[in-house]
View: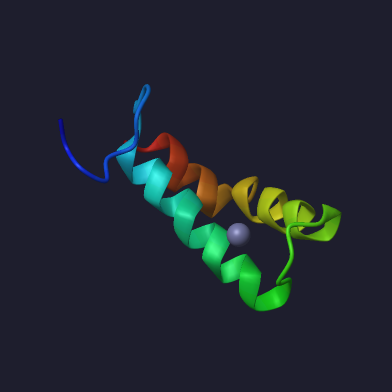
Length: 57
Ligand SMILES: [Zn+2]
């Protein structure tokens, strides 16, 4: 058992980290997990550059 590892399927570790970074960066703009926060996350996640990261591993 690895400590601190994410359980469940992990098809794209790189994409996972991009998501984590995106999450943290978005917190600079919106501190709470409200609708606006997730709209910002989704807006970035759907950008061509982010998709290149997410789908490129
Ligand atoms: Zn958060």
